[in-house]
Length: 192
Image (cartoon, rainbow, N blue to C red):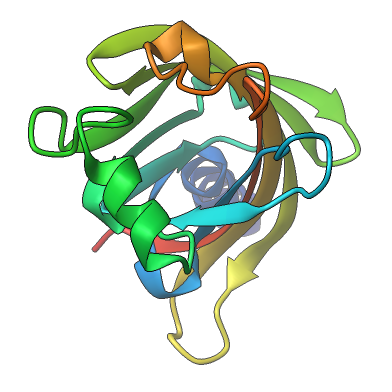
């Protein structure tokens, strides 16, 4: 009888561990997600803008990161440089043409563990009607119970670069840099 209880307990623990190791889906929190894009202006300054999160999900499998994925939508109308005139220019057909192409969308195609809570996230970015591959280097900041929300939560920082001319946004290149640096921080909570 005692052996039967031990086997039953082992089975329950095994099932709990298996459930915990399965991929988890997190909804990204727009109030704790910042996407910063930075460019060089005439070799002098390095201004930044911000993209607001429309929606996003992260499917994360710590045991097998190859089963992980990311999908994010950023409304182009949410691109903000804190300079009203530049914001208007960015929304216009001369740049991102928000009326015709209202969203930037990133969908991962591959997630690879690099060790030390670092990951290489390869995906397709669709911007200005063009889809091109982009590679992000991500760091898992934390995975665990959120002390305020009382649900499982995840947080990442990520960096990457892209060439805006690849997406048909090439005004003022090379005086205003073609290369855009991306810096991202985000939190998400488990999907209910």
